[in-house]
Length: 421
Ligand SMILES: *Cc1c(COP(=O)(O)O)cnc(C)c1O
Image (cartoon, rainbow, N blue to C red; front, side, top):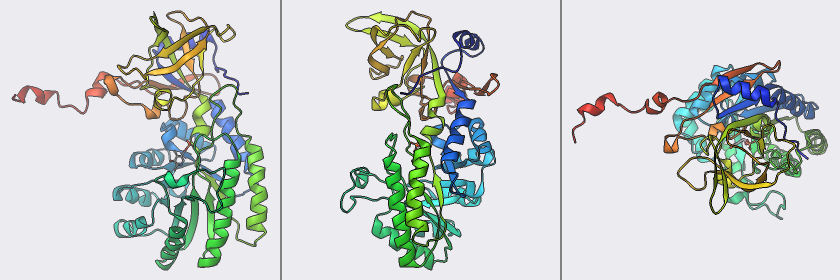
């Protein structure tokens, strides 16, 4: 069971809305730090273990600074993400640049920062060499495709646009070796929002075996394997978080057998999780604006899908609490909606929640990853603020809400008068 608590009382939240109007996202620093420490502890047996936080999950430099303090690097996949990482002082091999369909200027920035470049395709070897030059250390992204003998766990990676095939991987590392690259890493990511830890054990298994084969065939040594991101979070109260300590021990058992046991050089375990790092520690706080009773019951919030797109986009479940009514019976079945002129702008459909009143505060849970960052401006909706609950209880604003001036900043409204029609 995943408990869906709010780290503030009703009184504290109400007081906060006087300083910061709803809707807003608020992150819990203590939760983020404790979770980061659990992940590190699970892999403490591996001296080179490192988690590169997938910046896209929550691209806020204040959160990134907290994660840097916990020893995490950055997983970037675009130029602005690289700039954010640079800004918080996460540079060099503390960055892994795991991109795809990448323009040259992004590789250039990654190289300038000394980031580990993780290539998505065999043709990117020449592209990188011609546009930037090859660095000393290169990582390649493996797509295991339709695995021989089948792999019940990993599913159908051949449908994914990412990574090298197995044959391309052997050819790619050979090319890199012959072009003078000296240091190597191997990456794959085959799961997303996965709560079965066997996926990640199986990923480690695949990579450890492949490292042995590639090393033997090409006479190269690998410094690290990157298991990717994709560790899920229990969005539903009845779901269970991944047992990180057990995952760490199961990967260790495979490491002892397949790396140490085969006399291979020590290998660092790397990860690039986003969702599990900040997801459960972010809350979207909103207020009930309207109640409507037509063919169904509707509860309209002052937040909408631009603040949290996952329910509308994937039908994803996000738990909803009515503040102050946490222990009330859930006997009111309704759709909880936003105000976009899109009927899929709903945070939940036919959900039983406590009896709500206009003006109640509502908290949407697990919005700390792929939440604010997936925001958009359709219907000219403005993005909300991001707040941080510090460990000692103070709340600070880490991103202000957008204004209409921000929204119109890319339009030349001055020039409109001289525009003849
Ligand atoms: C999205 C992504 C991640 C992070 O995924 P989470 O589900 O947030 O852990 C990591 N690596 C790559 C390459 C990604 O595309």
